[in-house]
Image (cartoon, rainbow, N blue to C red; front, side, top):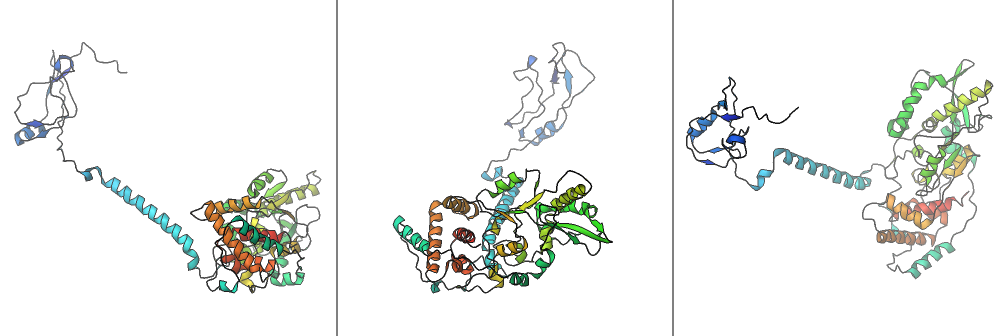
Length: 470
């Protein structure tokens, strides 16, 4: 512990040494005998001189012997005199190599970010497979009897809206025949049975397992390969898959389940909040991936609405998402058979909001004629496979929902004026289509949706029509 200088101990003072008389300029140290130290003695560990003669330079290279005041000791201390030539200051002297490298690295990162942003917005022009979510360059908008109006006063807008409402007719839609649905998706109907386990509330069934039982059943699952949210779940399923196999009559069986309920939207209406609250219930199970989008996109090979076609996700990949809650249902079911009081009342849900309104994939596989409409909708397949399925739809004030959708999904330069401009153009396009075609023909016409300046209004119109299509 430092208790300060001892007044009885002598201080170090440089021994008197003959000195030359060079010219010195600019010192940061103090010579022996400077003021501020007792007895005029002072020792600095760092001197900086500009020496103008070689003789003085040689002198200062030598060590300076020290002696103690009052009593000589057999100990010598050496003070090194460090010389540093003073460089003239220039504006570039403040820039050092590390700073220059950091500046160049920062510019490179900014350039890459800006380049990725530009390329992502222009990627639609590089697609090998065209997407029905983008406008077709061959589309001739002149076939529609409309002209954009610059008149945006309240009276004119109200008049156009009244014209649209006057043409809305909610006639019952003819449901497709079951044989048509089976013919269009034979594999899906061969995997999912028409009847489910009677003692389970959730739609589940047992599927015979063929092939090598020890092989990884999820090695080809596209959700496992491309969805980061599901990787941890699939890793756990791999380790626990074999112990959940049921062995009967020399054969292995695995339990399969579909969702009991679907949260189908609308977007920006609180579906995520409801999803998080329902999963807190002890008998409700949901997938790690909130929105699989299998019914509307993945089974057609649509990964993102802005991209073209990719590999189609088979129905087995979709069913794998529910294996973890299916195993819990099986555990309760087997416990009941052994006399336990636990009931197999677990239900499974998923929350793909696109299930309510997205039927744009039909343009890939059917004729997209302006006067036509899809031969069947997504809802037709779910109803054919799960007549007792539950659907949860959340609605919101349409203007607030539309503006929230615009703020969340829109590109840069967002403003209330830009929002008004986009919606007004979309309303005029939709009104022009209704001059000659039916409501459903305009709603499900992909070319018209692509011609709109935004998909905001088309989402609302699709949902509005879907509510009256069943």
